[in-house]
Image 1: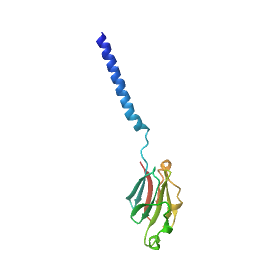
Image 2: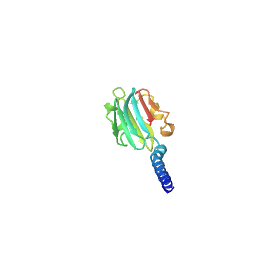
Image 3: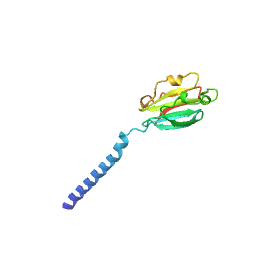
Image 4: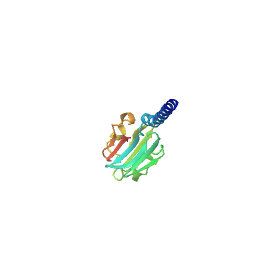
Length: 139
């Protein structure tokens, strides 16, 4: 009789430990949000992916994306680089979880006047049609 009782207690303890171990594994996965990233596409090609949680500024010059200082702008580029007939330039800021196209040498400036995108409005990309550029938020 005593052995059966002890066996039931041991099985009960093992089940409780397994249940707690399972909870400690699955609860953080359920509560964590998937990391959100900025994805920059140019003519369908991925040029850049960057986490929304990290503030940065990028310059897209033709088919190349590179991180630049926040002080960099179109006016800091050479006349040759700024020339829309020769180069396609966009400046993109990731700040406080929001993405914004701050400057462009495109002819219509719609990308610059589009409001910032973030995780809350991730289904609305910023598009620069003249340059074939799409800024979107992905998980």
